[in-house]
Image (cartoon, rainbow, N blue to C red; front, side, top):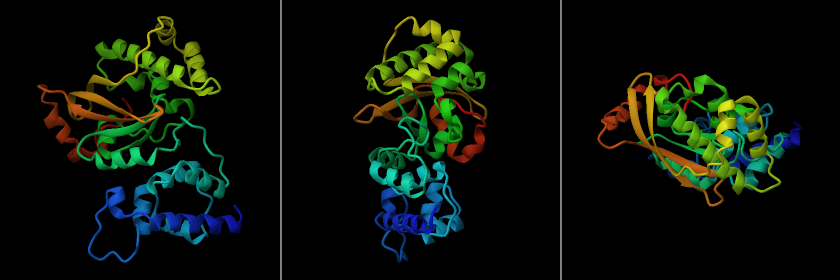
Length: 286
């Protein structure tokens, strides 16, 4: 990346940082704040970067950031879709296609996720790619941030990787499979005919999973708006939760949040998540 772009990238990051109030991203204002927006260390924390690394980026002297780091910075700084794309261009990185793990999260939905602090919550795409999780969702379901390519979709992992089902009691597998396939059919129908992402995913699963192929042949269609789940959490045991969905205007993204199923005692178990932290679950599920 040339020095001019290094300099412009640093200036752009600084300008976006200075416009954000701490309260906009769920941070306390503090009595001794001397900068108009976020501090550099706060942006680094929100993006999962070291303070030294972020400082280098703002000074225009850092190395070329990865696609994953750009996506994290865009979310931390609440960038619009156009601003996010501009950041990719400044970093000489290809703008990712919609629907992948680096997809842009709508700032309003990201803001709402930041305000959901007392229950597990995450934002996913209509193809069940996890875009961002709050700490309680990581503690309940595992960290989904490392998945790339086809594996970024939970539906793909569900039908191709036995480990993806580990959190679910075996008796519930067939029901969850049917729900996921019916939801995928609805999502594929809503997408533009020129969008090949859903079609490619369906074609791949038809070739890899006889279970998926049999369910797809049933032609069931149903948007998953809410669901009741039983989860075999490695530290908490069996947890029963309601999974609720809030959809973006175009239906391409969803905010999921998990509440304890009434009358099951799962409320006390979910309260323990904040104490157990992200070490409570080692594998991914949803």
